[in-house]
Length: 230
Length: 197
Figure 1: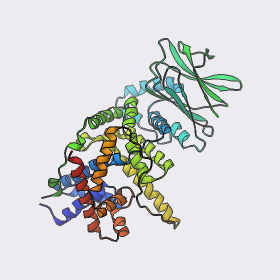
Figure 2: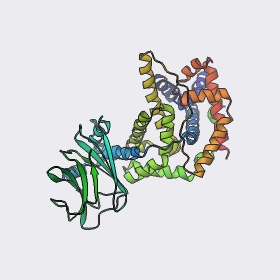
Figure 3: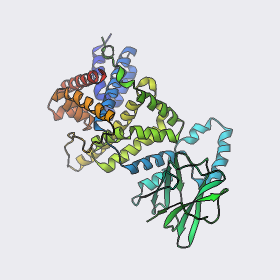
Figure 4: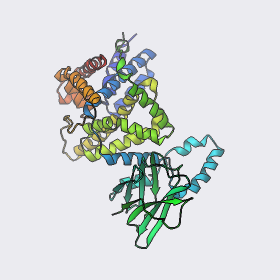
């Protein structure tokens, strides 16, 4: 049986599904749907769903290719919420042991921290810069950095894993020479790899080499890619 | 008879593409970065296009799109395939964020006594990547053409202009019941047109 008030509620399903209601109206409608009979609630949800499916098809008519740099930002912001910078790899390993002791806490540990991550701070910085380079073995590296925040986010897409027994090593180069900024082994490199570099020092370039074993104290030539940080 | 019984809608969301997106979302929920990248590549044009149509500012559209995908990364486990398609779930998130953004801007403008027109404008620079998309786009355009002018106007002011149905009724000097029926009937026409493949 459909009451007049139920009819009125069902009439709101379309504006609700189109987001054509205020936040207060939306909350009030949600409360009314929760309190409504099962049949009315179901009818409401069916209408909302149908409108949303329809508009998702209509969205082909407004499709618009986003700028290329947005991809790196989206990947970096998202994956930085989970992955950890290489520099803290040992710390992470230690934390993993602690988390492992309490399986229940894993889900909570993966939730984002309430304070903005370094990556988010970099992206929000007024002086944010993006530099990009093709990698010789395929794929590309994009570095998004801020001098003000003294940090950067490296995003590598489709870069092949280093061969067995070698690692990729990053070097921050300043007037005094190169300083290691971390290494990546085959396990660390996926088709979309993200890393946060929390200290840029006075560097003017970020360079990459292939190093034997677990990395070197000085870069072994050749430098396979170099991003100018200007 | 309730609305729900009258409405039935069918085959238009049952494409392999949709199932593939749902499977990807499932992997994204497990924090699979590769699946997330693929999901982005399959959906970015629709999300960015819709957001841009509503927000109408390049910088804000990029920010909003970034927020949408962050929400996807963090809340992919909320996606329930039984409640709708992955694309509809995603575009619902995207539209809501875009509307929130536009309303925040509008209320800021109102405070400055510089209330701008929110009339929907056609999207510029639309890029069609493939014949399939061009074909789909033509089909959608034909279906949009099958609406009456008043139906289309009401839906566009709300959906692309970010207006509430009350604001739409004020803008068009029509009563609330009229606006609600135009929206409902327009959507029903669209649905039947798009679903009848």
